[in-house]
Length: 422
Image (cartoon, helix red, strand yellow):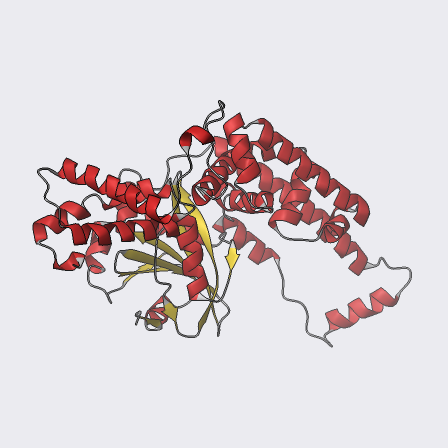
């Protein structure tokens, strides 16, 4: 018997315990995908049983028991007496893999910023250049005026110091998580997440100021260009090209150090938090980088499911290519997937935050999406457009997912290029 063919009352009694069963399944299976399969099998068994319940609580207990029965039939459970060696039970490596990884990453994301801030300036700078910006250590040496071998040695020293600081701050249980539940490149990934969430985005006033400073280069053949050629040929005149390269390297070091100091100082001096998801998304969009680069919507959807346990459909945008996906913390303990597209014609980025109605309910006291926006997108196919000055926000929904696209391009034209899922 299919669950959809059961009586409405019986079906409602079973469905109200879905979240509890999925939570239990996650602590006895390797990952969220296996947990979902276990819950699916449990409900198939429940629909065939058509049991009679006197109360919702009786139904919940029965479903828990049924889930464990299905699990034990499909997966030989460890003998608890045999597993307990006197030091406490420890899950087998194959168990809780996804849960342990998430716990390890949560600890790392709490520990890395303070450990990073305690490093020496030269250590923070080379980690920022190499592990966040992705510059090879030899090239970072050129930026910092170091021998390539010396620069690479300093990078390894900085990594080791950061790793030791993170492990020292861990309890025995957390240290066990770190040793068994994290990927080999955990430090680089953690530093990139820290840079995305803790360092503030470039202030608009700074962008305007820099744009005013930068001048257009003179056209080839102009008097100014010819003067530069003649001057560079004069041995008595300074080698401006070499000087500018050195000056640029110095400015990069100063900028990185200043950004780090400014970002971490801001942790101590933030004002009232912004609760509006539209402005929050717009303010953070420019600093989002892909933690998983892919042009495949299917791979992006799988990555989000593996990391967050939620399924979504990546939208299709004509004349735009998917660049990758990131998991972004828009507020404390409020992570959402972010899809990164690039417009083919203009090269402009399209950053799409994916919220959900469940997310809004979970954070209703801290984060807000205005009611008139929700009313506007109540019907699928409707869009809500916001002019934010330099950027625009385009909002729509598909099923329970709410998409907020941030772009500096033509949002009105973008709306016509978004294809509904088939």
